[in-house]
Each structure stands twice: as C-alpha cells, then as structure tokens.
Image 1 (tube, rainbow, N blue to C red):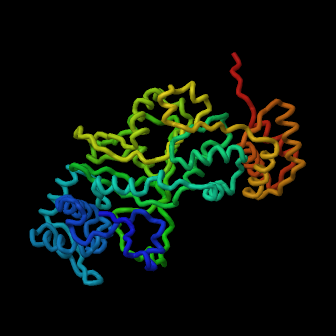
Image 2: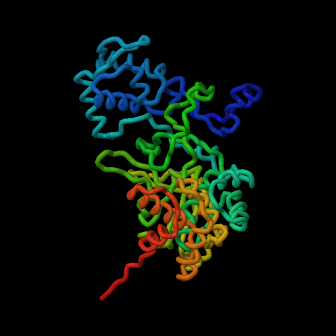
Image 3: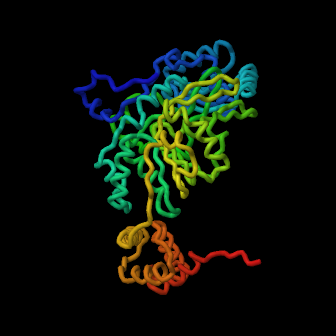
Length: 442
C-alpha cells in the first residue's frame, strides 16, 4: 500500500513536514492491507523462529517489518493450530513464542521452498507505482540546485553551463574525455541535484517469488531524525528511506547483472542493477571496456531508453514490466561515436566532453585538497610543480593529480614524522613514483 501526500493535510503541520515527499508508504492496518498471501507471512514467521529459537511477538513484528497489531491475530491462529506455543510472558502485554515439533517441520519445508528470512516484501505493483511517483525526471533541477551540488568541487563555467540543461532534462548523457578528470565524481554529484531522499522496499513479491531489492552497497539509509514528527508519523516499515542512489558499474558489467538473478540453492532472486538505480543515477564507467560489447548493451537497452519501462524475466519464465526511471550516464575515455551507432546516440541526447583543467583551475584544485588534507597552500610551490614536472615534461594536467600527489606527500610526512607541508623536494620525490612508466624490456 502506498499513498501520495493527501490534500486534506494541506493546512496542517504534517503537510509542511511531508511537502517534499511525492510518495510515502502507509502502514497496513490488517493482513489484507499488506497485499500478501497469509501463507507467505506465516512462513516468514516460522522461518524466523526457526533461526532464533525463541522470540517475543513484538520482536517478530520488528523482524518482519509489520505492525504488531497486524500480526497478533496470526499469532493466535498459529497457537490454535499448535504450530507455535507461548514460552513465557514479555513486556507490554506480549508473549515469547517458540515452535512446536509440527512448527519446526513446517519451517523446514518453508526453508526448502525459499530460504529468504527478513522483512516482509511488498507487491510488485506497489513498487512500480512508487518508482513512477518518485521518478528523477519529475525534479527538473535548476541552476541553484546545481550550484549547491557542485559547491565544494572545482568545475569550470563552460562545463557547468553544458551540464545544466542535460541534468534538467533527466535524459541520459555521455561524459567523455581523458581519464583522471573527474567524470565519476561528476556523476555522483549529479544525483545530488535532485530531491535528496526516496523510499525503496527491502524486497518485492511477485508470482510466488521474493526479489531482494535493498542493497547496502548502493542504498544508503537517510539520516534518522529520531526526534522529528516525520519520524513519529506511521509508515510501512517494509520500506526504507534512502538517499537517491548512484549505482556505478565498470568493467565488471555483464548481461547477467542486467537481469533478475535467481539463486537455485536459496530460491531467492535479486533485483537487477537498473532496478536498484531507479529514481537515481546509473553510471556505466569506462564504457567500451566491459566484458560485453557496446552493441550488446545497445540491443538490450534501446527500447527501455525510449519507453522508460523494462521487461525482466522471473525464474519461471514469466516476464514482468518494471520502471526504467533513472538518469543513465555513460563515462568513457573513448569517442562516443566510435563505440555505438547513431540509433543509440540519439537516445542519449547529451554528449559532454570533460577536458583537462587549465593552470588556474589546477591551482584551485590544489587549494581545495590542501584544505581537505591539512596542508597550507603555497602557490609558488604549485607553480614549481607545474613548470618542472608538467610543462617541461610535456605532461598534461589532470584533475586527479592534486589529490593524488598531496595524498602521497601526506603519507611520506606521516611515515617520516615530518610536518605536513608542500615543499618542492617532496613533489620531486612523489612525482618520480607516481608517474613512473613500466616499460616492457625484452
């Protein structure tokens, strides 16, 4: 079940608190309102009890992320069928429960069928509606949001002006240019231009299958405002509020990761990468260097890029339709036209080159990283570095150089118990190791 913010709250304090939420999962008040089969919830309870041995009713409700009031009737039914028994009293008018012999047999059978033990899932349709309500394309961030998102990094004005309309459109874009110039950093900052937080489910249920969705590698829970009214307002605990995700994949990308992955041993599925990136950004880093050909990715995504829906297959062979609601960013060191054909490029309307920094921007980057890493910035020493190790050596500036070189100097100073400072001789030392080329001598 989900709700959009109701108009009737418009004049209330809660409406003010929820003003930035286009979607909020409402707490179910009964088992039918979960839109899940009773047998599924029963099996989750039994499997959880089989794992922990004994638990209070309220703890079980927390484990399943369902209200205690909703599960009380189910506890009574399981007791009457002699599947669980009381094992003592618990605080707040509650009891401790454990499995009977019949209950352990039921739990073992349930685990053989599906070993998933965790929060109760939400129906697929509820997830689909949530993604549509929280789509990143509805945000249309303006100049102010971009300034805030890129406020603590260096970005030249020309690049900023090119990025603005592309981000505002919510359409896909290519970031191309030489390595080390911050394409991945920009992709992460782009996500910040949009509304900060969304709701995602722990797991999804469809046609007898449980699909794990929440992934701690990509989904970072929003800050818990424990004392706020929004925290106290009831919501469906099967959902978790996260920061808009940025899913980054590089050379490890395979076609299998773009599909729902089914584990035959556990009989549990896992959402695809593009599903996990919904309502956020999906960065294909080092595009063109994956183990799959660019043309394969083109054939897989050419329809979803235009229709904004994707068709995925369950283990049974049934196809399901899911939203394709993310900003896709392709980052590459190669020329986009050398990678894919015109049909694909047409569906990625913005192609933006990330060029090398100017000398002035290089100084700005050193100022930023000197502050972050605890150095005192010295423009003359940076000029020495540029003249001696870049201009004279015909070496091109990269945006990663200030961070990397200063990090090596800090490590050198820490190891030798020296004051953390930038000195010409320190740059001479770290540049020698940082830029050393390994030659194949035959």
